[in-house]
Image 1 (cartoon, one colour):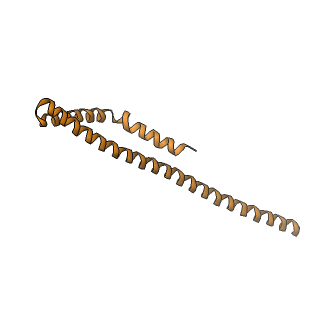
Image 2 (image 1 turned 180 degrees about the vertical axis):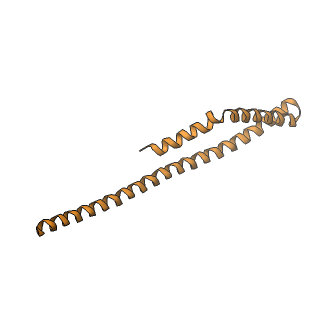
Length: 118
């Protein structure tokens, strides 16, 4: 009887050690998966931010060039800048009206896709 109890105790101890090891390994796996997803999101955010900064710079110089050209065509520099400013206001208004379809939903979908990819 003592042998059976001793055997069961050894088996239970071994099982308990394996359960603890499995739990520890699972926690480590979840930590690593979270780190991977976070780093993927962060790298996407940084690359998009860098592209956005370059796009803003290119748009700024193109707008100045267009403003100067239109100013030369109209004979008054300020009219060129006024026309380009109105064009920017129009583009921003259209973007604001359609922000959910153009910006929010695609960004949300991209984040969800990054979080769910394996």
